[in-house]
Image (cartoon, rainbow, N blue to C red; front, top):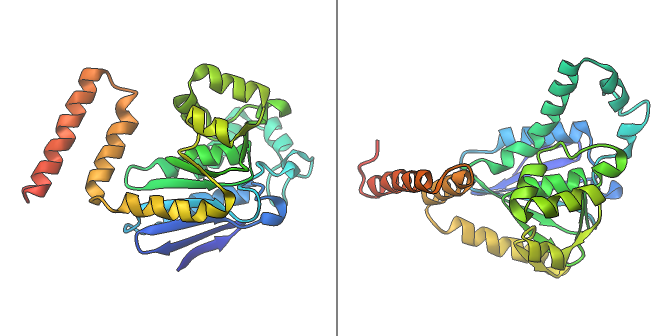
Length: 259
C-alpha cells in the first residue's frame, strides 16, 4: 500500500515493514528541498504497526547528493536559492536548515529500526541519508563520499554525529576533509556497512535482515535500541542503572504486571 508518492519519494507499507524509495533514477536520486520535505512527511505518515523501515534508491545509485541546481542563482522553482538564503537573516538561515534536517532525523526513532540499502553512489546528502539509518546493507559497487568541503560547505544534514560514532573522530575528519571515496570493502572494515553483498543480492540480503529484526518481541527491541543509543552519553554506572530500569519494565510486562 502506497501512503506517499511525490517529489521523488515513495512510501509503501506492508504490515510491519515500510519501504521508503527515492524514485528519480534518471538524476541518480539527487536531492532537493522538496524531496527533503517529502522524506519528513514519510516519517510522519508511518502507521504505528511499522517496526522496520527500509530506505532504498531506484536505479544504479542510492543518491548522488544535492542537486547542483541548488547552487545556481535561480535555485529550484518556488524555493529560495541558497544564495538568497545566505543573504537573509541568521534566524531565517538557521530555521531553513533545521527544516531540511527533519528529513534526516526521524530514522533513529526508538520505535523503529531503519535499514539503508545502498548501491552505487551515496554522495554528500546521499551519504548523510544512509548514515541517518540504524543499519546499512551495501552492494559491492557502493561509493560513499562526503563532498561538502569541496564545495566550501560542511555536512549539515545530521551526518557528522553518526559518522564519528561509527568510524571515530580521526577517520571521520579525514573522510570529510578530503572528500575521498569509501568503497565497499573499506566501508565494512571501518564499520560504515553492516554487510556487503553483490548488487544482485542486495534486496534479498535486506529482506533476510528485516525478517530477523521483526522476529523478537517488539518492546524488547525498542528498549534495547534505546539503551544502545543512550550508551555513549552515559557513564558505565549510569548505563547499568538504565539497563536495570529497562529490564524491570520488560520483566513486569512479561509477567502481566505493567500499567
